[in-house]
Amino acid sequence: MKERILEVRGLNVDYGMGPESVRAVRDVDLTLHRGEVLGLAGESGSGKSTLAYGMTRLLPPPGIVAGGEVIYHLDDGTTVDLLRIRDADLRRLRWSEIAIVFQGAINSLNPVQRISTQLVDVLKAHSASTPRARLDRARELLTLVGIASDRLNSYPHQLSGGMRQRVMIAMALALEPRVVIMDEPTTALDVVVQRQILRTLVDLRERLGFSVVFITHDLSLLVEFSDRIAIMYAGQVVEEAASADLYRTPLHPYSDGLLQSFPALKGPKRELSGIAGSPPDLRMMPSGCPFHPRCARAMDVCGQQTPVLGQSRAGRSVACWLHPVSVG
Ligand SMILES: Nc1ncnc2c1ncn2[C@@H]1O[C@H](COP(=O)(O)OP(=O)(O)OP(=O)(O)O)[C@@H](O)[C@H]1O
Ligand SMILES: [Mg+2]
Image 1 (cartoon, rainbow, N blue to C red):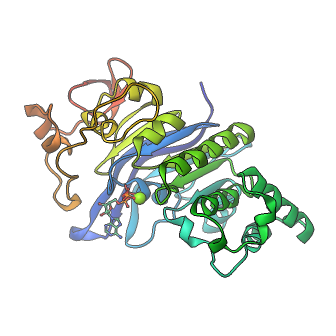
Image 2: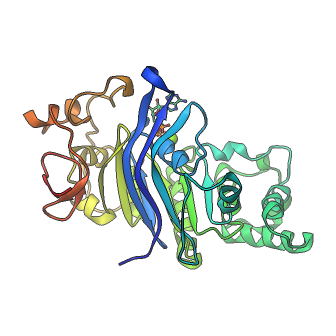
């Protein structure tokens, strides 16, 4: 059994309060193991960012965590619930234990500061080393992510989009975190650059031993780079599987549709057909399975009862009436 590092249990996140509120993340359970790359996929608006920010308490208002727990396993064998520890304790864990690269982070580099200053600032805020040691470490971090260390004195605008992304990864890795959460860090980049950057991250993961939660709507990237994949639809995880299993035999019709929406670089060619229709408005969720109005395989039960994520008879984790759950 692989060692667990981060466990999300029954997480619910709302935007707003009272009758106007919408539930953007619903009853999500997720487990991240040590050294693993866990991919999180789903169409735009499926709740991926909300989940990532909810579980790390970085949710901007009007987002509210309405319930659940996020258990983090510390190195000494003890656990903490990220949703309940004191702010000061949480701040200590950020960057040093859990580093997060936000969606659109590529634009968050300060345009008027050299890369060296920005990397050194992260090191300075959290570690007590000398200026000389910090600069050496900044140089080392750049090399680690595949940028020549003489670029340390560049300003962000002097770097390509791919290089800026690599700088963001270098910053995330600065304090040797055990978990790196990346929210769609590469969308603005072309497909080839995206793959190179992910390759770098996955190689580093093998060398440095951190775990990754990688969020994207491009399932073909996840199939290539992650160990396990969780598929989100309308705020819920509807299927979770080892990458290879998901690619070979997606069980949820939505997972199948997503796989057919992106061209894969490897493996047998698939016809790209996409998914008809669009995700539901969270204020007017359909009855039963939220995917049933778009599902070509919907049955009567699908419009009446909501399937929950559980182990199917074949031992796979899916929320779909086509694959009845044997244990709750
Ligand atoms: N500030 C907000 N107020 C109200 N609803 C919000 C707010 N932010 C997000 N939402 C809603 O929450 C749902 C989930 O949004 P979220 O940004 O988590 O999706 P996502 O899966 O990350 O999408 P993308 O792939 O576009 O990044 C969406 O329906 C969105 O409209
Ligand atoms: Mg997002």
